[in-house]
Image (cartoon, rainbow, N blue to C red):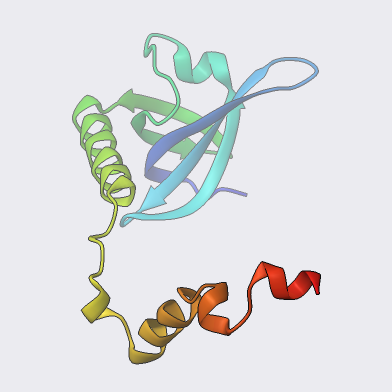
Length: 128
């Protein structure tokens, strides 16, 4: 049961049920998700024209949505922050030079670089 009150809500997703399409709103207080509210999608979309990731200011009473207002500025801000995090994750870390590797990593790489001649045998010897 969702406590009555004012929340910031993020439209997480739409789901199809047997009877209708519902919207799942993640309710936040103080920047933390505290609950979720599932309401008929028509209640969220009525006059708002919003989609997933939209930020809303909502009032909840009796486990239902009493009022919802689309917050364009908060929606754009969250989208920009999410894109910045995605871009940061997509960047490759700088390549390490061989001198930056740990001593055991340098040895392993050097050991892997030996060929058959260094090991003291050749293909002809295998055939004998």
